Image 1 (cartoon, rainbow, N blue to C red):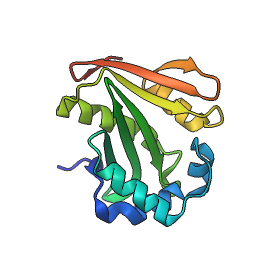
Image 2 (image 1 turned 45 degrees about the vertical axis):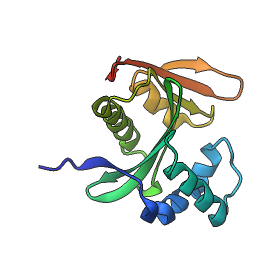
Image 3 (image 1 turned 135 degrees about the horizontal axis):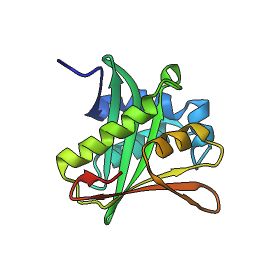
Image 4 (image 1 turned 90 degrees about the vertical axis):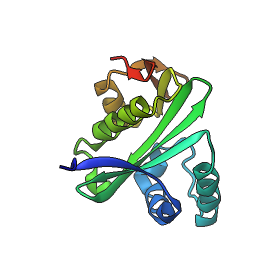
Length: 158
């Protein structure tokens, strides 16, 4: 039996979908770079990230429908998380599900990282709530809140 929600690695064919999501007004407001992004800028960025060994991008599916994206940017022993949920599915617990799935993905793929990090603007209350619910430690920075969870040997510590 297939779960109603799962992750799949992003592929070239996902470029239009990801551009739609990154162009969403709320996503732009919650991004650290809130400027509008042209399709050409997105295309160049996406292809670079898709081929980078320091980045993993996944599409989150719910009931067979693409519902969001989550990206991990690796640096030494850390992975910085960036995620967004399609406007039609926000406020329904998908942020929690997408973070749960990415933690399982890290566990099963035995990624050599010690910390998962989410960097969230003060105004993004929904993402703050998700990281708190997932037991990330909270650190106030000058311009944002950093949420950190220590993991070891592929096991997420809560």
